[in-house]
Length: 572
Image: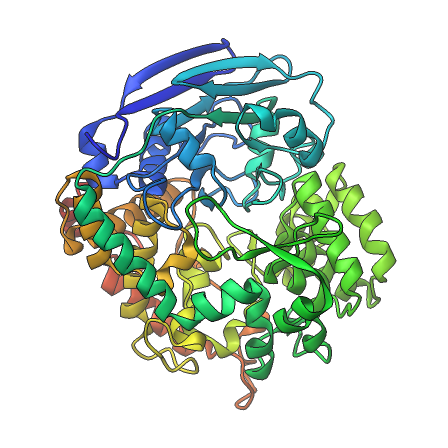
């Protein structure tokens, strides 16, 4: 079957064994690949009540049917039960790891158990080998990647993952990292890295038809100014000036908004201040990463600019540059790290000087208590109100008080406060693919669940999250047909996205989450006695949440109804 290798590799680190099984074709039709396949495997293999840092948890790497074939499709998805949130968690990682996995003939790599000593997994030409890694243990991601990169694309952890820091991440090729504490899952298994190099040539089922669709896709990218003018020229710092102009940058742990130094962190200013070169993922025409030619360092994305700059009221760009590099090297999520620091500043009514950031981050990377994440750290201090999170995952630098659809997206995400499960900033701020009224919750519930379903599809095809600005379910359906020969209609694709979303919801419900977890931090709501202001009306928000449940086919407590379960082929 073109597009899928029909091979799933299981690595048990406890027994130091490797087993190869056929990928279930029915799972492929229902869950596509990537995020969908990863979540389905997790739900079958990992009980919702297990300890995320125990040997029973699984770490699953998946490719997609279009991986390596179309633009913006070289990455992989990593899925596990998150030790930070306790939820199901999938992360669409950039880079070329997924393409190499596909070229090695693998749809999914499933790692379980716990080794007695450090190992890494090496995959080459369809063979998986468990290799001793004592010499790599204790090294950060830059050094580890340098030691292994001649063997292929490297996904590894730094010292933060080894210390099972709950906000640690897996870093791909020293550049692309994620959220949810999946680095701690790898560390708990004594898994230092996975390195993969494939040799197979990736070819579409219908080359001529596929070439025409690829050309259409590239034209859509070029016609979209967010992609062709913004991200291509400046990377994600392209958002800074617009967000500042629209007063959408939160600061001081979401107790304030706006910044006097936005221009100094803007994509335009950064481009004028440094001699830069593009860093592109394989198959990507955008090149949204930027590397400083003189030092070789990758510039921070908007997430880091917000976390260590705007959020901490720190105008020192060099310190933000250093903070971002430390996060990538130790394997720390910058959004979570900056959020914890912002709350600490509020608790102590002080300020973190730019020179302190280096020390604090290195201590966090070595296992200091703030690395537990904001919710756990401040709950232990009886100050849960300081944690700006949903389901334990800290919010990012897009203020939901003036982007009401994004507020609902944060609350309903199965991951927690993750803006990428439905980037409503697209339609509400950037006007792509259509412009919505960002100040209102009216009508957002129905639109949101469509965006969530589409994002689940893109993550399952393993297209870059930014592809949502230009790619529709119709184009995805056509690409699947010409690329793989499989006919899945646009409506069927969205149904698959809905099925994935419901499966994630069921997993979280079984893990103990309830409708009460679909809630924003209290300070984002208007005070009961405050009629004016730009906080979110709790009454309107709860009404929109109930409307969202109705659109989803769930009951008033957010539990999927039997009719929806039958329609999706699921049970609860």
